[in-house]
Length: 240
Image: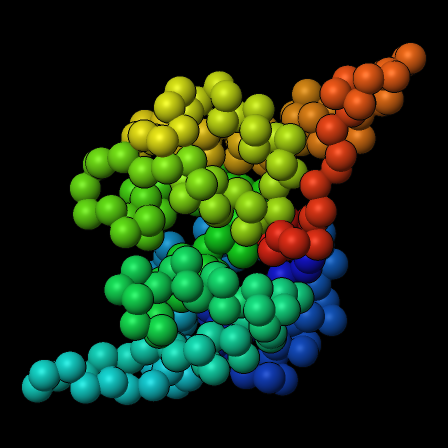
């Protein structure tokens, strides 16, 4: 799935429609490299200011006591997701539920920032950079206020959202999550760092895991038949 790097560049640097078009015509770089560059730009003063300004224009003002905050509700988030990704509305609502730490059906700037960072770092193959910065924030999105434990089902949810193949997930779970019913933050961190570092580097062994297994010779026992491929259509597709 391609991320719309032109639109995100416009948001980060607040280009006018005309200057954006002119810059786009001159741009002759790999889209993934541009996504990686834009990811780094999110953490600059200019990039962060651009995102905050854009969010102030698109978000809804919500009263909280005597003050007000800006949020993206379902409609705003789905509309934005359609603009910058190829995810379906159903997939985008799944992402909203994942990011919505307070279970309010809406996202604050910090959660939208995380979504953009995931999208750009995945497409730009710099997921390890994302993980170094935000692994603790993702852990908190599992509704954990401190370093406690969770189940493997919850811990691996992000991997499925990113369309990581199930065979890869199972291999890494066996290597990092020694008790699937009591996954610690350290297990969680090791699991994703291993997957993301291999993905970013196009590691050959990682690609081999992704490949369809060769059928065994003389596999007459159904128990010995190769595992079926997972149905990737059931997963969200930010990585592709």
